[in-house]
Length: 165
Image 1: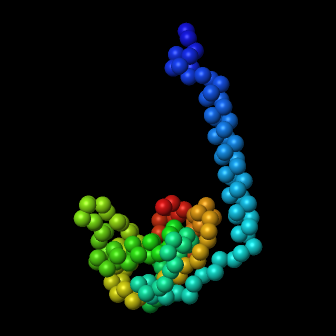
Image 2: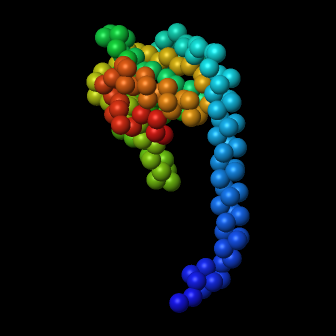
Image 3: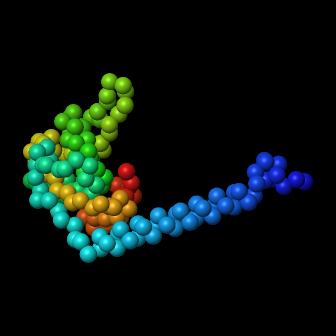
């Protein structure tokens, strides 16, 4: 019986070197991530004052965590993360479309389960407010979102989805 690597024409040494390179690259990236997070440790997140969801001003391309608040009940109904202005925009677009996902002319769907839930719960857009904070590390953002969801238990979130995009 011939060696599988020989049969496939692959040099074992080459594969071993690639694996070692992958391990070293991963370790280096993790060390960099740990240093970035350590640097952020001393900074508390600064949450914006809640504002009406369709008028709140958010800089473009800010990565962070957000809360969607139903003002008549003063309850946080959703906690999310990502590029904050894009997420807010998608939720508002679906809400304004009577809770139906947006479908482009090319057939691509822009869904928002949160926008759908918001519309079904209360179809008055001015009752929905938005607060957000900027956190410049995607891994930390996911963890913070997950912990906020567990603590606040927002009605529109599926806790098992926390940290997912």
